[in-house]
Image (cartoon, one colour):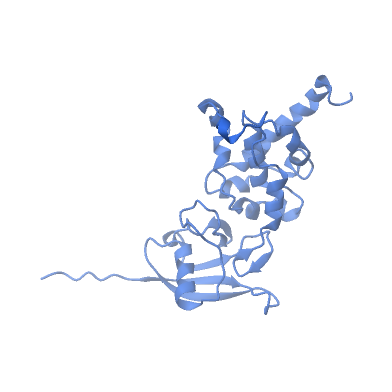
Length: 253
């Protein structure tokens, strides 16, 4: 005779911020009672709501593997990737909101335009010493040179750092952690000569000097990019540039 194993299904209450600009005057929370498995993450629970309880819920997600960066949300007040936030690590009542410091487009979807503009402003691409044709092959680099900036290539543009950054919340002109870390990534690249072209944005008051080094950006980063360290390293480099520039003939004494 086979022994019967009784399993207890866990339920969680998702308090999800809802907002439809076509009919709502302001956002409001709606609670969903959701059954969940032991290995579920918050994104699984939200997908259950979408599939089984409320088809009108809007949110972003894609890979479910912490790679695309699109499922960032505020979970119990903390910026997280909902595909990495395991329900087993959270209480039975979970509050889910769109990322802080961004305008809400609808429900859990935020407007990303400002971030995309800030990202573009730092020229986040290789500026080579000389252009090569496709037929000429790749811009090669030694492993030792790659190691100098590899950490900063791991950013997935999830914008959790912007949601956590008190300076970005205070000043919308601040270029922000992810964009400045990416600028640092290219400035450290031995194949790149775009540092001077990025300087007007990166080394401006709205750039690195606006950062007060709270470090919240690095704490919430899902890939340990450490944008706070990138910004501080850029401050040191910019300071050296300021004092050495007269010797190079670039600034009047």
